[in-house]
Length: 175
Length: 465
Image 1 (tube, each protein chain N blue to C red):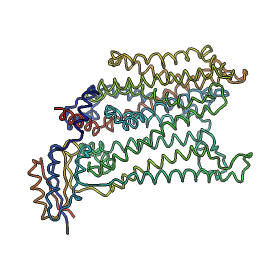
Image 2: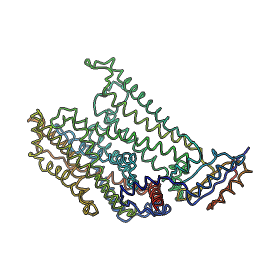
Image 3: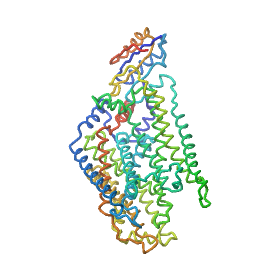
Image 4: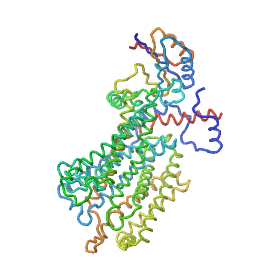
């Protein structure tokens, strides 16, 4: 069944919090808290907590990047030094561990950083994922609550919003 | 009620941690956007004066570089034993400048030092452009610049023998990593602000910010991932910054040159880097505050804190400097001791004493509140500190080459030619030009973090009431 979207703009976090609280206990059919998004000019963890657990997986990308970076770093350098098998090195080690650790360390950080940021972009589902309703006042000073629900439920959701003095309610037929 | 701070904590903080008001915490969020965006549109006339002067300086530097490229390094008076001259001294100076961006944005971020929020963005930009400038000197000082890739740890199938054990190869890798990570950190932390620019821009600028803001809408999922990723990158950057300057120090310390073969060089270089970077932050703070009318965001209490931080780092640097002198003086290396004496009494003695005076005595001006609150005095002091730190790098490179192991190699009176001075001046023009362009195109005050700062203080004030 296709879903519809509605976005309510609030003046402050308190009003948005009260609206979220009421949505949470409303038990409306065809509506889930998982389909609610808060849009705000700054992060507000307490408000986000009301939406339930939304785990962040960026650290896994960081870990993968760090492991990958160290491995690639050491392997690339050691394989480049592998040429020294055919060149006379005066008795010195073909793959000297202490100096190679420096370069490995740098690549560990470089790929760790890059993978962290890439992981974040993947978590944002960029560049394709743009939620359909947005108001430029959100980047200024307003708090938005975006709800995706069955079209039949949307008027009830809007009713809840209206009880908490929203500045504006925007609607659009979604997928 | 949605309350982000525990009332008990606030009560304890109110009683035991009295705070100066860093910024006006009653300023409206919309006003923050308006002020910062307006500053990008209409800076003071001084902006164009600085920009054009930088451009002229950069142009002169380019002329000198072309002249040197066409005629060889001889025109720069670079020959044995003076093979590095001002180029490597200035290279270290610019690498050092880059460290304070990491200090302000990463270390203070992890320590939740709120006051960094209005000023860390330009410090990060300073980091990026300093590294880009430092990278140029690696190329400039090469006799055959087209073979620059010999310093990179590239695969060895050409049998070109890059020396993986050489700190110069580590250096290139570390600086490359630091530059890439700094650009990523700067850009990534700016995404919410780029969305603000997108929402307020028109025409081509809107398209530009739209592309860069990557569809940021400030959703809770975006914020949660952004916070974790930003903190993680900050954690990576701190050891990276330390490693970069330690490796630069290793370029010197692993050599046998008298005066360089000192164990304390890496921490000494890191402290010097933080020191010169903090002094540069004070200079740029004062310039940006005036040019972009940021009086309400780059406030005197924040300048005061930056100055106190600089003073503390200056004392660390002074201590490590004394450690270096003492370890040479009491050590069992007569040649190193002679080099130290030569620095203090030889042809470069004036520079050595100037360095010690500017680096260790002038910072005591930062210990006095009345001076810290005087903007013209702080501008002069910060410039003097930077001059002192540049002299420090000059003193590391030039007198050591001038007074090595063998008396027949001594070049006690050596001074750089005008070509070297021109390229060094050009590097300052290049840095200032890039920095000023950045400030015109991107928000130099982090709008979303200033909003957070204002909001948290509002919540704290409300809880107190």
